[in-house]
Amino acid sequence: MDDNDHRAIANRMDLFHQQEEGPGMVFWHPRGFVLYRIIEDYIRGRMKQAGFREIRTPQLLARDLWEKSGHWEKFANNMFVIDDDDERAHALKPMSCPAHVQVFNKRVRSFRDLPLRLAEFGACHRNEPSGALYGLMRTRSFVQDDAHIFCAPDQIEAEVARFCRMLFAIYDDFGFREIVVAFSTRPDKRAGSDDAWDRAEAALEAAARAAELDYRIDPGEGAFYGPKLDFHLRDSHGRDWQCGTVQLDLVLPERLDANYIDSDGQRARPVMIHHAVLGSIERFIGMLLEHHGGDLPLWLAPDQVVVANITDASLDYARDVASGLEADGLRVALDLRSDRIAKKIIDARTMGIPVLAAVGEREARDNTVSLRRRDGSQQVVALGDAADVLTP
Image 1 (cartoon, rainbow, N blue to C red):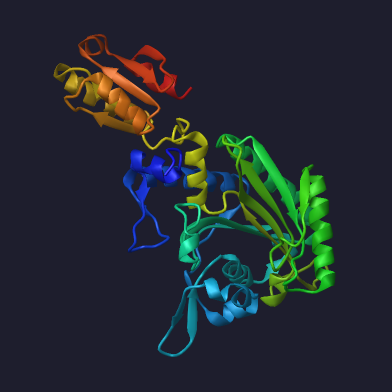
Image 2: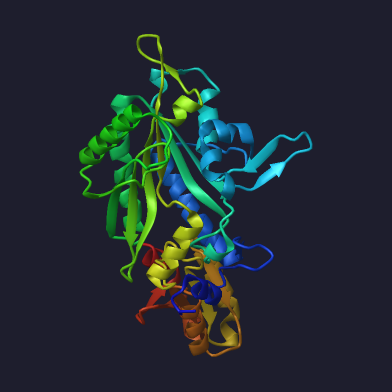
């Protein structure tokens, strides 16, 4: 296994593991789950700012719902199916979109309610072939940052444009600067009429132009219910990874009888826009680890600082420093082993910790810390200033 493989990076950083008893599943370790939650909370905050309201929908849904939506015909072979005693089959959800339509349908909606933006960290299960499983890149259990917008036709362009602006800003924050956009058109096997597809493709193309996207055409690669824009991130090794997506759907609202009352008091079908920024969070973490080689930016690092004592005489001061940095909002590890400071520096580097705060008798006397960054730079600062220096 290559040293830059995300599985090798995760092993040395103690982030997660996988084993035969849970094929295609992930056992997140404490440091790995800290990273997971940082990313989840970051996306949650971004979605809230963009006007999305978070929901949670069931993991297990009856077969007849999947048949109505069309997913049973398309994905049944990749769904985990459970037959109840009453012989009514249920399946673990491979995606969240039919469940989000149920939330929309639960109330009478007015045109004044639109656009309605819903988001969910949806836990999904897909029975991928064992030979296709590959670390975090292809799993059987994963979480999607799933989002859906229910809107009127004249709101499509604005909604797609605002989501794309957010998406590009998020990718930039994670360190991805090169993004390739693909416009995926109707596949041979699809649901919906040709007229519906004509309207959907024209509307999404207009929205892509309004968002000033430079895109290529991927013929036949659309979802079975609608055309889509896929966003491919280019990592530091020149590899492209498909992550985000914007999908325009006129089919599921029809199949699942979603409607709202328009300004004339008549029932109308909403347009459903499917969104994801990261796609699978697991897969995105794998990409992120390989893109940065495990050297995550300070804001993403599970442990941002490790406080290490130089001698036993500074043990108490090291504990005080760690407590102070934690109180200032930093994620702090404490290394009080009897090893030499050089060994602690190497171990911190191996674990991907961006900063080591070394404290000895001099630092204890002067109430300072010696900050050593992963690039080799060093800086002695007053303890009260350390958090501001690290997170300006």
